Image (cartoon, rainbow, N blue to C red; front, top):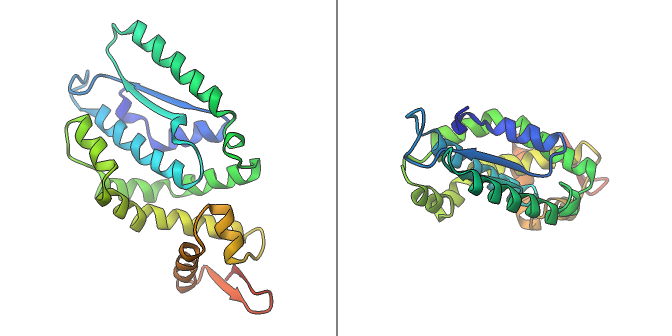
Length: 212
């Protein structure tokens, strides 16, 4: 199967099923067996999902993509051995990051529910036309990408995680900031946006935010 057909939902399913790491292997760049350059699409997906992993508190090194030819058996063995060692060093998914089981499940569910939106944003605003690994890597570390990500996927992720937290009960801005690893000012901005969309409300009696 072409690496370009490895969908974001496949990676999420692997992590949701308890896998501690996900490896994707593909053809060498500009040497696509199918002539579709699907390996570039796979690289785009991996770099985007690594950013999402950072946002939800998971170590992005748990996801890795490498390219090689069919004759690179020794290289494949070396890469898999190295990746296996890295995953062992990181520890079990969630536990290695200090995230409890219920919180991890909630975070992965939030991202899973946003997959259709993430696909749309990736296709319309974050899919780069570059045909070299260097150009793609450069874009995904650029200020432009960080701005676009924050305006689209980053905001949706934050608001969705806040709503998921509030389903457990009313929370203060500080409580939410601590759980999500955001600053109180960032949380306040997302809460204001959520209030305008009537997702959340401020409970004067409890002095906490709750679901609307």
